[in-house]
Length: 69
Image: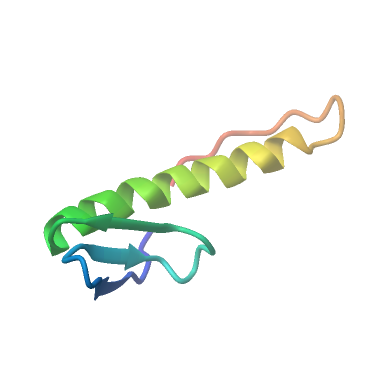
């Protein structure tokens, strides 16, 4: 999968990375490289958490099938 990420510098020198497609998915780093590494991790965590919420809300007895992408 691919996601667009927005980088912007903060006054304290840190670079903030945000994924607009995933509300609340934000990270930061000391430089652009670190911010990009961190936002990749944040995107993975965001997607995992949303999947867990969806799986937990399935009707009793309905078993999900795991699909990797």
